[in-house]
Length: 485
Image 1: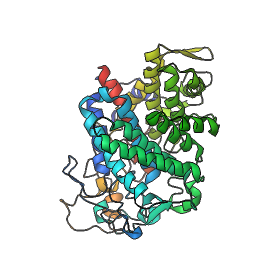
Image 2: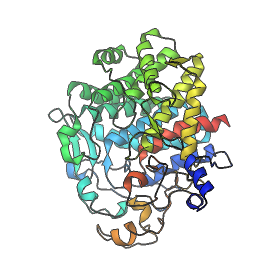
Image 3: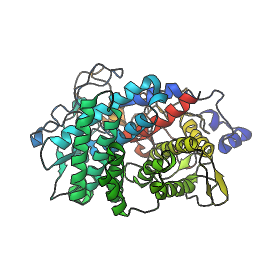
Image 4: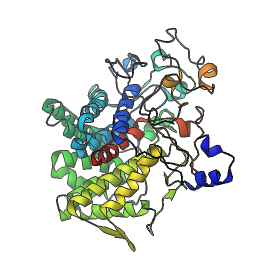
C-alpha cells in the first residue's frame, strides 16, 4: 500500500490504472484452507479443540430465556448476535459448494462438512425445539451493538426470537429449509441417519414457510431491521427452498409449487437477502446437465442474469472498479462479489459439461468467458489489485490488520483472563490504530470502495467487517481454481 502512495507521478498512474500486478499466482489451495478455517473463529457454544485457539466457549445459556437449548451456530460477523437468515444462507452456500465441488475440495472436504454440521446442528435445534415455532435468532442486536466485548464476556440480553403461524416468516423459514435440504445431500452417503433427519426437518420447515405466508421483518421489526431485513420479500426464499427440496427429493410436489409461484422478477444480484439468481441457476442445471427441456425457462433466466453481470454485455447493469472488481453496493461489497462469483464458476461448469454457449446481444458467451471473469474476481480478492492487498486475513504479505471484529480486536481470555465489560473495550481496543491482537485467519472483509481504495480502519464496518456469508460463497470458486492448478 505504501508503494501506491509514492510521490512519483508515473507510479501514481500505474497504481490508479491497475497495471501493477503481483508476480506470483495466487495460492488457491492455501486460500481455500484458510477460507474454511475462518468458521472456527465464528463459532458460538462449547468449542472443541480447534486451530483458532484464541476463541473460547460462549453463549452457553442461549435459548434459556425461552426454555430451550439454542447453543451453537455462528456469529454472523464482528458482533455477538446469531441471526438465522444469513446463517442459513451461509449453510446453504457451504453445502452447495460441497455438492458441486466435492472432488475439487480434496482434503478440505472434511473441513467443509465440519463447518456445515456446526450450523445444521444449531438449525435443527431451532426447527425442532418447540412444535409450531421456528427460532430465528439469539441476542439483542441493539444492545449488543452498544458494546465492544468478547463473545466469551457477553453480558447483554440473550433474547430469543421466533416465527410462528401468527407471526410468520416465510423468508427465514424458506432459507432454513434450503440449508437443511442442501446439507442432507452433503451427508447422504457419509452419515445417512443424519441426512434423513435433515431432510425430514427441511420438509417440515418448508411446509411452514408455504402455509403461513409473511415476511419475518414484519413479525420481528427492529430486532432484525435494519440489520437483516428481508428487503427482497419472501417469494425468492420460497423459490430457493423449494428448488433445494426438489433437488434433494425429486418429489413433483416441489416442482409444481415452483411453477405456481410465478417468481419471474429480473435481478442482477445474489445475496443472503435475494436468492432469485441462485434458485434459477440451480434449476437450470436440469436443462444443461440433464438435458431436461422442462427447465429451459430457468436456463434462460440464469443467462439473462449473466448478461447483466458480464462487463462487455450490452445488457450489463454491473459497475466495475478501475482495477476490475465487481462493484454492487457500498456496504460490504465483497459479499456480492463472492456470491456472484460462485454462480459464475458453477454455471461455467454446467456449460462445459454440455458444451453449451449463449449470447448477450452480439456478445458470444462460452464457459471460459464466465470462468475468466470469476478468476479475475477471486484473484483481486487474493491480492491482484491496485493496492496489492489481499482482502483475506492471514493470506499473502499484505492484508487487513484492523478488522471490525470484537473477538479479533480484543485480547484473548488467555492473554487477559479478567472480564472486559460492555463499554470497557471501546477506548483501548476499538478506537486504537494498533493491529488486532488475534488473527482471524481466512476472514474476507467487506472490501475496497469503488475506486479500489481500502482504509483498513476498524471503525469502518462497511469495509472492514468480515461475515460468514462472504466466506461461504467463495469456498466453491477457490476449490474450482485450486483443482485446475
